[in-house]
Image (spheres, helix red, strand yellow):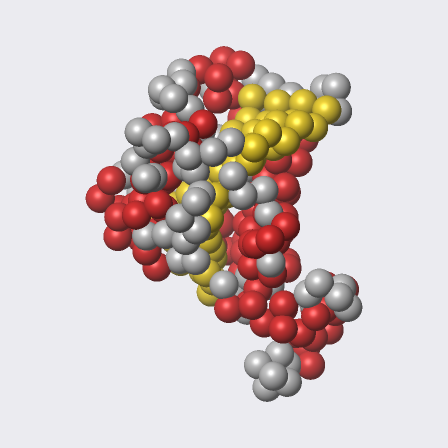
Length: 250
């Protein structure tokens, strides 16, 4: 046990280790967990930053975009010097600066049927930070296929939604159980709808929190619920939902 967590690591994560819900064993679990983040923009940026700081040992990232000046208002991994560069390249360098112990794997490509089928099976927890429902439903499909834990985030204006699924549990519903039909991507379009920078970072931080809870003890996770957050009114609602009979998760 002491060999796995060196004196340096114990010092780095000391403020977590003293929490009775985590301790040495919990920190070991965090270090051994493999997390895949799909989309490293407004949601994926804070997720990656926080998970690296907390000691998640393996972080993968899928993204095909380059940094644009309009991203800088909310995407905390990037600076003005990064404009025009691929996000995954900056992501890898930045995560290693935050915590050099983290093993980082990047995929400079758009999430698709082909690559998600190959990549998702290699990770324990999947984080969806994408901004369109086609990608979200694909991520849902392959996370379900490989029985992974999936944390989904969605944001617009002052609002955010967080879902948490444990597909290793046969009773878990999936994203399609909640959305009976594919919603319009306009509601996730920051370019036309707008987004407050703090909204993306608060929802992304909450996704990271869900990841850590799933690693330590999934009993306290949002499983089978959606958390709806309105940051303009500072209102939070949690809604539980169940499997639909005609859904692919049955």
